Length: 315
Length: 315
Image (cartoon, one colour):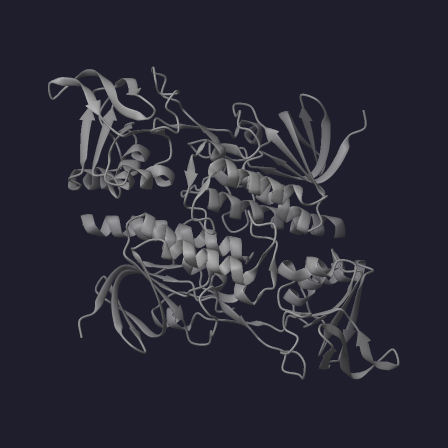
């Protein structure tokens, strides 16, 4: 079977990958976007498709995550040089200067690779949690916090991320419960901030056993009594029990990752340690992970790939 | 006169500054955007307002620069915490942990500062060049190159940037003249690329004396004869004779700049060497300067300012 050849193959069909594809095509690169990776089951458009309302992508005051994803997809599809396929990438290896990709269906060759594989949220596995996703159960405090202005919310998690999310929620909500299975263990600075914030109440050594609601969340049931009762009335529940970084394929290719399994990139260029391999978006060690930053880093990666290919052609 | 106090003052009202303002407000920061800086006379919206059609801001397949700028402005204005003023900033100094800004009209205090002051293009000062701006005379090959698909264009300039722009134009146009006053002097790698590209023809030791056209550019008049004539028929002219980086105010504050006068930032966080001072967009040493990257770095800067202020409040 003859392999299809590309200049730039993007693994990951989220906002980052779609924007990178659009930019690469503008630079004349024959580009393939492969939408699926192991562990991720998002449709084309990626994680943003799971967000109800996006208010923080500059240029769109208010748009549904699905509509924004569609706009990014249409933008990429507008270029003939871009092909988008929903195929699960099984392996990537380097042979000389060429990368060989195998999906469940086909094999491809490319001069450069972009990992835009993202992360997935660990889900809260209790009754009601999945049913009320986007109806009070959320995963991104920065994205969805402003929806809970002057409301009461709870956040589940004990990490530094959970603490930081609680602080972000405190900018909007009138009351924030932090529910941690063990003790809350953020960085000291964030612990102090939590203590200094009168809106935030920490409930340690307790768990959410069930999420209640009608059309939207109305409360949670705790495992143990807290202030004499097991029911806590809340308008929203944020889940911050961790991410799974989808960097396994990259790691197998020799790409360096940090302790969190995030791909270490040069933030000026989106390059990884492997020549010809770039990374952008949630899969990287960028501390501030938002759709807009992933999209921009995807564009930067496309430009870096274009520069890399131009150099290689001369050699 | 009592000084108005802010958490975050953004100097520069272009896309970068507007996006930073929106994000800062979402993080609860009282924010002021000051639109004018010395040397820049752009309206709110910045340099993008001078681009006819923007096709490379992910999410908008095709939009006028003016309309996109308006959307970014409306997005920022949607937040009560954001104030936008068109005042020329005359000085910024640090007093303890507080920054003191003086404009032509007023004085302000802020906990943090973002330089989003951008650059300005050096203009080609020959008859017709200003008249045909956006009607064939352009400054951004990456932005406007695709408008000249299968057309003939000329680019004026002898630097590495001019050479790189010529290569980008070569991805679209059928013919690219590079007109350099002295010899073309790009990085060796780009020189080789130029030589290897059959679409590109270099005219050295010559100058554009006039830009001709009717409603749009039809040609340029050269200073000296080239292949027996002084007139060169082109559909577009790109000007790449350099930028002026608007980093003077920052430098006076002790912010480090590189040889090009670009502000050196941590590309992960948009921090400068001065605590509490951030920079984003065209004024920084980011190699890939596009609206989308400036916008994203502006958002990152807002987040870093929020983090910085939270830490300072605890101390």
